[in-house]
Length: 154
Image (cartoon, rainbow, N blue to C red; front, side, top):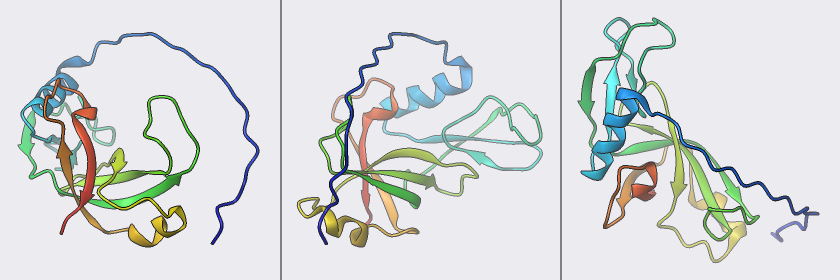
């Protein structure tokens, strides 16, 4: 299958900003430095949130209870990207929607550990429901990008 050719336009956006992460997201990010993916749990509906949140958007309960996951997840959805975007890997690459453990929410991250030399074969290598695990950076700073990507579990 031949990769289609699309028209492209050059746009430039540069946004410098900072924001307060709050207690829940700060704790979640700090755990990433230790190669840990935490979740927090709603005391009412028992849903687990990964990434962590300050409150359950269904029950409006404050999320104070924490659980440590084993870091493995399941691919719920994905997209193959063939265009270059700033601060993203060289195309082609895959962005996945990943459910960590038994979380009621998902996180978005790169899916790697696969041969991307033949872009038309990528959708055949990744499946909805595929188990994945994090590949960590050697030096971590407390950021979701401390996880280089998620790779298929062998």
